[in-house]
Length: 129
Image 1 (cartoon, rainbow, N blue to C red):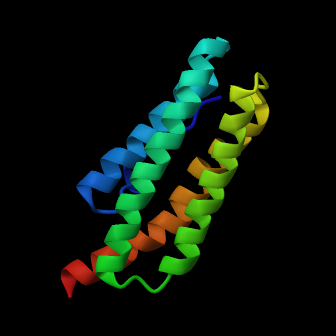
Image 2: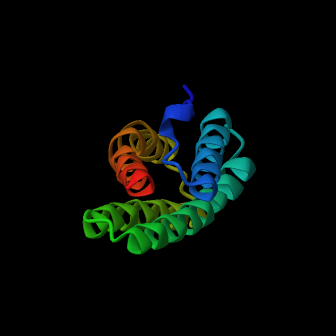
């Protein structure tokens, strides 16, 4: 099963939107593979991509004085902590693909369309004000 990027997930910031779409693509690459070498490199890429995207997104939220910044950033940190933990497991030779897949699916299917959508609505309201 893949996660589908939808244009409705765009928040209205081209750089964040591009990075978010790449996170979906990396998630799909992870979900599609059963090759341990590919899975190892993909989870490292997922960690790096998520960290870079979250830093960019949080900088945008700070510039906008986004009222949900603290809660949103905490969600980012939780995902990163869990993803890094799973990545460390992989480094020790233990691949829990179902747990990583569930984590990333939840992120793509819940956080993006719900929490990021609120950020997009806030951004749109600031651009029209």
